[in-house]
Image (cartoon, rainbow, N blue to C red; front, side):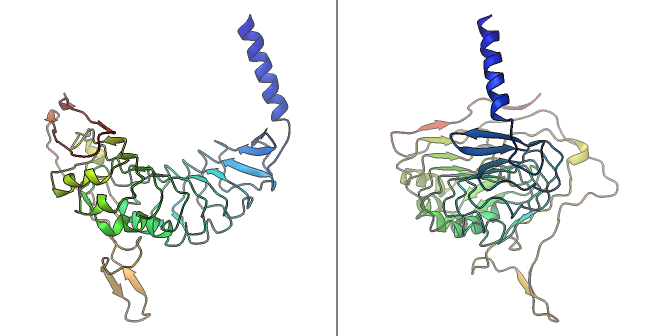
Length: 333
């Protein structure tokens, strides 16, 4: 009986809290918490963001069908979750008005591009989640690190699953993360990105403030980079589980079109990135991007359903951290 009464009291409180509107869409639930307003517009089938009152500082637009990044939200917004939508790009002016933004999640969209300069004005950004945008590729890390190079607030970067599961492997180079070295980043998630190796020097360039590093579910091979983990003196947790882990292969997606955009179409144009061609008629500089995994018209696929592997490695680093790994046989029976 006590639990029922408590549930009724809590329910009545929420009804009183949400008995007002802070958005042009009346289906958005608005919550007043200590004088700060949060709007929940999840799962409403929205194709564009509604308007909000100026005193709204937190907005959740999860699980809608928004294809353009909203640029007319309240300028004082500090929290924005626009995951599970249809965003294809983040442009230079997308975040220009949101100088107080602290938490941004654009996970599980259809992102293919984040323009250089799009994060530069988000100087208070603490948490950035770009995960589950498999056509974005880790190459976008060049633009992200360049835009955040002067940030003193960024703490968490979630870049998990930015590569196609059955795409080609990837080597993280120094130029991908060089601009992050002066930040105070504490957590970096690079899991599920088909990473094969790290160029020697990459871990030495990471901020000394790194505490949590996740490189699980990749295809890491042995290399000189393993000796560099010792430079991460403040590392608390290193996740290296499920390397070369078997993913169930279905015939319908074995040769799925994988629009790998790692070529410099997405990246800042540096001396390291050279695959640019100039249009002789317009003088426009264009990157060479192609979808190189195309489905043939007729194909017979043979593969074994039973596959196993294991991995064992020794890493030298500080005494105060732990390694999360899998030392069991991995595979599908």
